[in-house]
Length: 242
Image 1 (tube, rainbow, N blue to C red):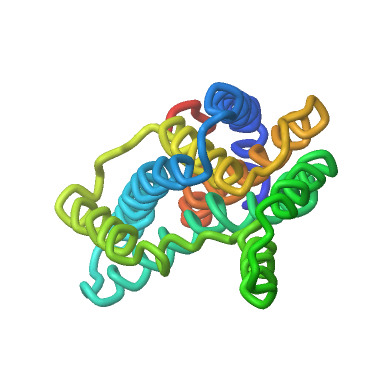
Image 2 (cartoon, rainbow, N blue to C red):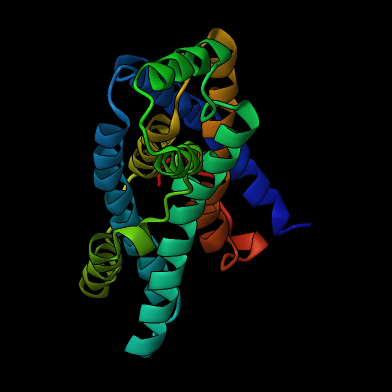
């Protein structure tokens, strides 16, 4: 319990800023709500790798600080899985579950009716082809985007870049705020690229909660909980900068 006390203190301390970050994510969603799903994907492909770089730098740097002697293999393993795991959970997996629970990836009834009318007016002669297209449309309505697999040539090198920077500058400190904001924006664009409904007030309030949980738990575990596990209770001194 003595070790958990400072961790709980830090989590509580960072909750307000994480909530502020979630609100900036909602602002992004409102500003870019008319953006196409494809454009949202491209922006996700910018913020997610940037988040991976920063996460790899923090995880690898902390490991090197606390483990004075370590092999490059262990550094690569810890830095890679720590950054890819946290960033994927925060930017993709948790937002995906939020999208599913809120139903933003399912077109509203009015949109479905309009879609069926369009399809009937342009009904192809080959009904088998139409059936295949309809099946593909249903499958594309919601998509868990795993960057380290789908953009492996971008995301994986981003992780190794962060590890490389940490190897030469293990004591470089990056603001926790930057980590939170990058993750929030990546999560927001993951939601937008799957959104097929208008952003109602109810959905927006739900999204604040989704973004808060998506960012607060993974990023705080990466930036706060992990290093605090190496700090003895008697050595802990509360502070407000990371």
